[in-house]
Length: 467
Image 1: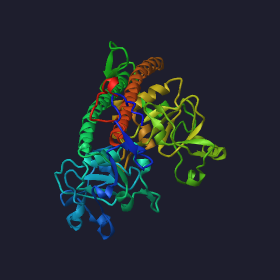
Image 2: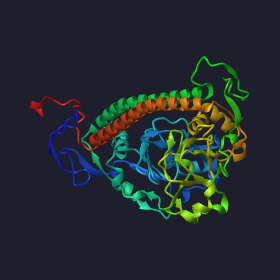
Image 3: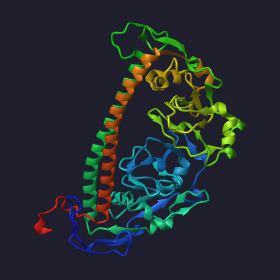
Image 4: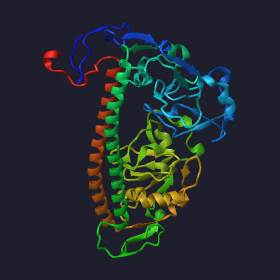
């Protein structure tokens, strides 16, 4: 095998054919084995399953772990549910212990795994999970192996009646894994713990930078749309709760007054029988959902349409360039953006509000910035109705008071905010790119180490003459 170095890491001195297609070659002193030969694998099966009646309140049972407790390759208890003590004690073999390996065997994240490193309360697993115990290979090595980029595409899955991918007990047991020579699994795990921790720290710093930049952008927007750009402007009490003082020449008015006065200038989408599921088709006039509305701009994710004939019937719900569109539902609702110039005319759904702004007096971009500001968020949250997700009614929305600058001043403010946001967004984009590169590096390093492509006993490449 070509012993060309991967980055600063050398390949092993000698390789052999592994007999497994996706391993290809392994270091000559490594072996291929089956998971069942190196660990005990348990799941919740048969009569030991449970129903919703077995789910109890905190303090009345054991924590029951699900795929939501495996995030990336980390264990988390951010979301928890509890199983009755009776059900917990029915299955002693799946009582979770320190250093057990959790494996997701059902659902979109099948194959993901993590190690339980600390236990403060009794825990068990739900039917979507497998528990790997008493491994004779370092459990960290196994976890890194399952989380490597090579593995998931090679795991055999069956589809249940619901189409959900599922790893059966048989294909988990018989899954082929590389077994390093004696003690090297621990060394590889130690190496990856050290290297991934360094990468994770760098990723965390970039993510914190992104968070701070977003907070800065929000603060700049919130100040500009409520105080203006002139720090010396005379101020007055706004008369609006939470807003405080505003420039004295700004106008307080109901949001419903900013429409252009045409029929349907301030509407939400069609309800009930006005737009039925069977009327949604693959081509035609686009239909806008709340998922298409972002505070950073319109980004269409939806793929459904209505026919031009149906769109004509829903003319009052049509969206054109320059309209302001707002989500009625959210936590809180109120995400807003301006419908772009080069998008085709579209139809909004019932969870979307559309404002056709009077452009002789109001600036659509300013309205969108104002609704997305901290003040806009407070107002929308205050008039929202609690439910599974918060919702605001069209009537309450229109009756809400806001304060607006003169039209010419609103243009100056939006131009300023556009330039400021563009600069911040460029830095955010670079930070996002850096995170992606580091995540790719992390994944590649894990895959190379656990399949023997790099020799981690010698992290730094030796001199060329010794290669």
